[in-house]
Structures are given as structure tokens and as C-alpha cells.
Length: 47
Length: 230
Image (cartoon, rainbow over all chains, first blue to last red; front, side):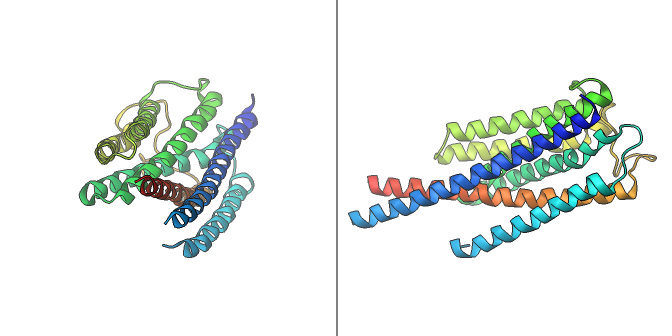
């Protein structure tokens, strides 16, 4: 691998890792927010 | 901060970070001159150093949040510490990947057990252990206190990593800023590095806000479930 290959690989790794982490956090926030709403509704009904 | 007020803040931070990222990449690849000895591969520096800075910042927050948690007993600080540690590990991992990719064409080896590399690897292991300790003792007040103490003690390695290239003779380059006489960077390189550092700090803020929100939502889910069970 030449100089540019190492440079490209390093930047790609950083971008891909950060993107995957950001997307996974956003997905978790969405699913947990839904779960909170659902549980709140369930709790209200049972009261 | 309620749900309605935090969303525009996320959006604003995201926009600013994306703009800064664009500016950083423009400066790195278009404006900043290529280093004479190492060539293009030296440009890894502009992501490698900010990743290390962000990791240090994250572990500093773990340390401060852990101290406040031990003082106040407020679980929010414990969640902040756990969230920051996870992001710190992410950025330390990036340092440990980008470093060898830079080292191979320059030193002709991906890895060598010199002081800077070894202490950085130990730092990564310390906070992996910290997260493992947290996950094995989830939802336990005592476990959170153990983790807080671990988070504070673990931070001792951060100044050791920083000072390692000053204290020991290493293969890793000497500090280019605040280093010995004769060391230093061209002004264009310093400017690009500064912009990259600011960009990564913004990125860290966004990731921390997202990760903290996940931690808070998880604890809300657990709280409602425990209320429903009882």
C-alpha cells in the first residue's frame, strides 16, 4: 500500500466508525423513546 | 432540559459540526502544504491528534463526573461518566488504528512497544475494564461507586500518556507544540490542527449528548418497568 493508500484507509476508518456510532445512538434514542411512550401509556391504562 | 428545548440544540450542534468538518477537510487536503519528509501520509496527523485530544477530554469528564458522583450520589453524574468513557474508548480506538497506519510507511512497522504507544494501549485497556465493571454491576449503587473510583484512578494514565514522549526516548515523534527548541509546525499546519481540534471537540459534544440521552432513556424505561412490576 502506498502513502495515499494509508491516508485513505485512516480517514475512512475514522469516518465509518464515527458514522456507525452516531447512527447506532440515534437508533437507540428512537427505540427507547418509543418504549418510554408505550410503557407510559400502559401504566396509565392500568391505573 | 426538556425534550422540546434539546432538539434544536442537537440540530444546531450537528450543523456546526458538519460545517467545521467540511472546513477541516478543505484545509487538510487543499490548503495545508504536504510535509516534506513523510509526504501525504503525514495528513493522518490532523485526525490522529484530535482523536487523542478528544479521548483525553472524554476521560477527564469521566474523572470529574465520578468525583461529583461520589460527593453527591446523584446518578446523573454516574451516567455522564459512563457515557463519556464509551466515547473516550471510541476515540482511543481511532488513535490506536490511525497511529499504526501512519507508522507503517514512516517507521516500517505498524506497532512497536515504545512508551507512547504502550501507555496509550494501557489507557484503552483501563477504560475497557471500566466499562466491563459498569456492565457487570449494572443498577447497583455500590457498583457505580466502584466504577467511579476506577474512573478517577484510571485517569492517572492520561498525563502519563501525554508526558511519555517527554520522559522517555521513544520512536514516536517529539511534541510538535510546546515541545523542545527546534520542534514546531508551519503556521498553516498549526491553523489546520486547531480547526480539527475544534471540530473534534464539537463532535465529542454531540456524541456525548446523544449517549447521555440514551443512558437517561434507559433508566426511565427501567424505572417505569420497576413501578409496573411492584
